[in-house]
Picture 1: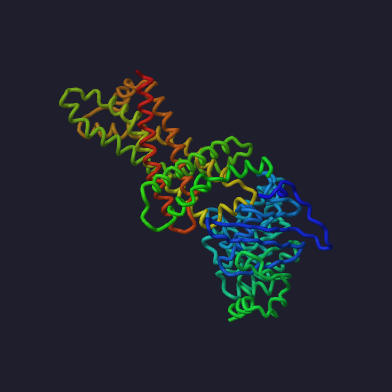
Picture 2: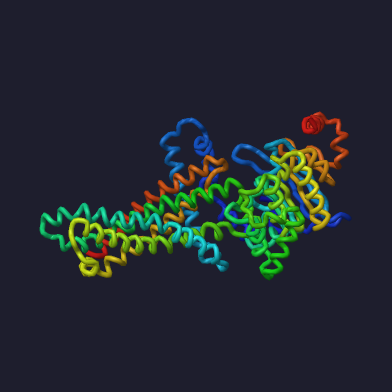
Length: 261
Length: 288
């Protein structure tokens, strides 16, 4: 890693506050170079959509942000802290401010919906009383419109419901940053739209800053304040939704047209 | 990089990921038939990974925050839920041992030694080894499959980003529960084995409960119990470690879950037998 990664780099104020800054990120698996040189910023209270083909390294990118994967080189600053150099305790502290929605939902199979929701709450907000925990659980369940499934096991829920409960589990600890990994993958168009609407609602209600990894153009259109296209391990295009839709670039056009069909 | 950062990186480094062996690693992941050198390399990296994993579990066991509730739940899962299987096994072992041995002892006019022979066999060898092998099958495969499927479905990652140390929550609790519960299950199996033996002795003969048990315990010394009980703690730890290691290091596909469960049973059983051999040798050396 570079020498400059030994210190926590404060994020400079340029009018818009930056919550995540990624600089020259590289990640390989064996001989496969997944991320070659990725640099971008996430601003406070914005929804940044990261588009790209399957296997373009989108999921690897957000896993590097929470250090589920370690990059080969490059710097990731989250809320002013260099993720690569944080101690285990420092990383645990930072992760309490980040919500991560996994592609598969990743609900704990052996726990009920209530236990799934209480799990992060009891660990991150340890001072809460039983009554406060119950209230918080009901609040997030009502936010995702599934207050009636509280005693069910994850195996008794549909794909869309699992995604919603997973989202509820993520927002229950009031994160400042949300990372969504393919939030609408495997869902029907109506449920996908509901999830997209939920992402927007969460952003408004909890004032979160979000990175949404997807290859679902409809979800991207519905949620994005800004978009990034990853291709061949690098940022191919960065801009507003209109910039992408009006792009004359063949790759961007084919991506949007294929998805619109 | 800071010193803490370096330490952190060391913790997350498995031997198989250390550079310098790229040609071997490429071969290991190819579909072509593997040579002896590659197989040996794979075996050694697996052994080293297991060793590092065990060291990490040991270190995490002494961390400040102990997952007490999960530990108690795992004790319940390992202890209480295995009781029916262990009960049947214990009774059957005791009965079979008695029914098989009785005719020979009758021929030699030594039928009075039957309770003593059964209890020594049960305490020293049959109880610990057979209970541990049953547990390697039931508990080891359960741990391998559960943690493997949690890995495949990103539940372990989800736990990690919830500021929960999955090694401490999932692995340490299971290993400690297995280490504590398997000796208890062994003692329970020994007791039921002796009951089964009394039933077996009464199928063809007639011996009272009190006489049978007093004859049995008159042959047992403290040193029969101690080494046999100590080794069951190691059996428990090994079954827990192997089950968790195989599940925790499972690959990405669903196929790897089955493979993790399967290899947890095979390796767990094999290591129980090897540990037993070592324990017997040590006991023998200390006794002589």
